[in-house]
Length: 249
Ligand code: URA
Image (cartoon, rainbow, N blue to C red; front, side, top):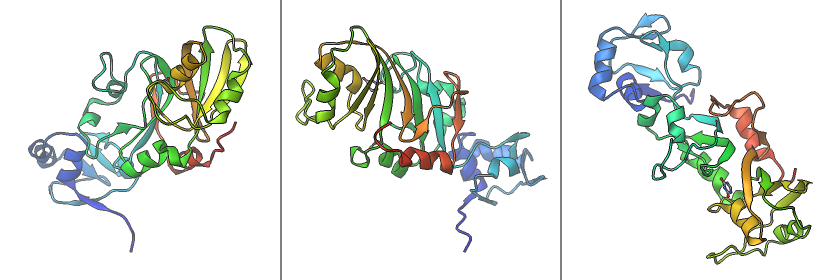
């Protein structure tokens, strides 16, 4: 048994966002879909959903989009928002337009605030998403924090205790690791993803976060050559790094 999943060609293209079932059937009938060098005109042709599919299947002369499961890393720029409900430019606008029609849906793995930059993963694999964001999995997220006021020196011990209660919450935060880098600069590593968590942690100790940037999730670092606003698809080894990291740096 090969273990490779096949999909009907018209269903695959519709699920990748190339158009409605009718629209993609017209593209196929026009001879604009080429597999391994030969046009395929049968809408019910079975196509193997392997990661190398974009090297084998061309749509109107271009490599087909990657089939599921698709996982990406985005260097989220400042100002882009993760939620469809927030005003502002959505992070999804940084991807090709047709990706918004993909099935299964591509979602961000957790969220970053509009005024936070850095490493943001996206996936269409619900199980993977859950494994990364679940607090039980203890996947560490590291933030570079710029503060309005100097650290006082007691914050690290308090964050590490696992007793800090944020306003309006009923459960204390899990222990977090603070590594001062200067009077107003620090790394903060947390394993949860509560709403505005880092900003609220510093507000709880009378400080204010001026700038926030995430550079690491698990053992996976934001690649130095990935500019803000750029994304790339990640494979098995980078995904393994997400789960391989210790909670400390
Ligand atoms: N904590 C915050 O306060 N904001 C983010 O974007 C991420 C973590």
